[in-house]
Length: 199
Image (cartoon, rainbow, N blue to C red; front, side, top):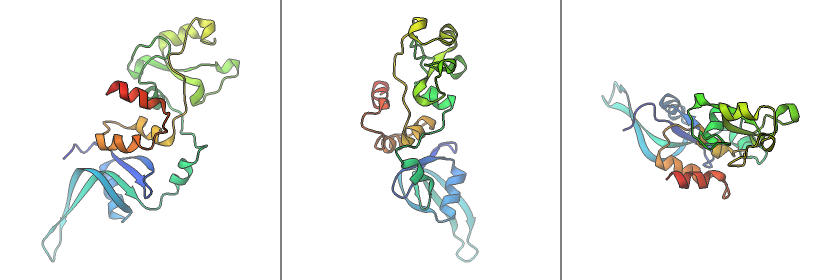
């Protein structure tokens, strides 16, 4: 069995990844009868109380992937125009904690969000116009375009799909969860190349 902080991947009944949940939320969906099916490895065995009549103790086995009934958010998130919310933690994960200008890897504290086309020049605060930059490169670039600052992007920014976004938010993703998420990535996702390099 795994540590209680191991995340469970929750999907809708069709298998569309929805979110990461903790063991307490997993127990809740089991208790409410919302589980359609499960797959993956057994993560936890949660023991409950004893039945007064039979004397048996209730035991709940929670799997690494839990599909649930009745989530209307899945329909919205599956649409082609869905854009996941932009935040630094997920942005840094998308860019593998690399500065997209100098190529060096940093902890989150050493990174910042850079607007490729600066806001002052009409750029937007959107996935396709932001990259991870170390503070030194970001300060050097200032309010200029990369080429004006003598910098060159090492990768093109992109908007993650919902499945990619769920992956980027994950912590300690298990092999079966990774395989499940990868099956939902677009064929030409930039993350395929990055993950194959890391393997």
